[in-house]
Image (cartoon, rainbow, N blue to C red; front, top):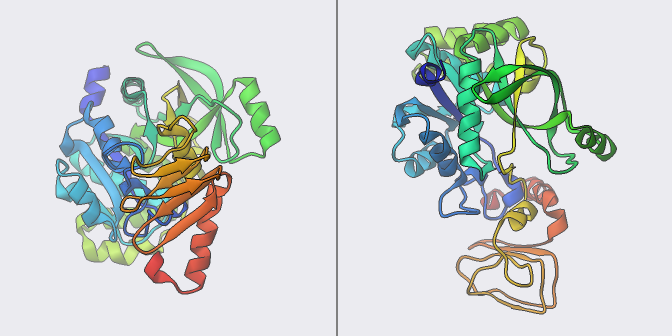
Length: 363
């Protein structure tokens, strides 16, 4: 059953977003998923490579925006150009996933969607692929939906949480649990309670379901959106450029979590320890990246004297640090960032201020 289910599986990789917290390296035309932060490949390339071990290139779709489509195509030479789809407007994940479901259903009435973010790090790829295999097998029964729940390694307030319910069954050797509820980003005290209980997992935005199941759930939860997406599909789907541009920007801007996942009954979770990170800031990159003996992540050409715990990105210049600690320094051809590494989550605020000041040349 597992192999049969995988034959009908299609990956939908979500590659929109601006990645402002990695400014000045990231820009609107080169957001986080197109950066080479931890390997020689972009995060998007890494995301595609992880599923290429399970699925052929012609069953992988990448959904992005018009600013990024050409760049995505350049770094994904093996993916058919028609499978790199530019949305005409940013409407969050629910409309995008609904659009993708129609596209897959057009190809395969038994199509199974594996929805994945393009900008995360997963170090235990074999475990990841086992979880996807198990999920595809489980959702081959119509009506079921699965999310991959990530085993937390600490109380994080920046992630959503999934509360595990009863043990629902097994898919091969993988245990499947029901989902009791989804919880948005909690305060730190609540996050500590969640982690201590052992009943909560991080929500990494990875979902598996039959395309037909997703569309039925969308019809129940968001009927107006479902009707609009059906009109786009009837006109030719993602290739119906005029209809897509007219209807899609009018759709409600809402995540798939809010639109569907929190309201369906047959929702299940696979608990997985994947060596996962959403790579949400320069501080996270510093945690994951190799370091020198003083805890600095820096280019070989740099010089560090009595300096520790710094994150330095400087592709074309030699950066010399003397007696500084815990900084992020990012040098590009038109901008230089110097910030407290502990406050790297706030770099997005600086980007918004630049936008307010009319500095579009730096965005």
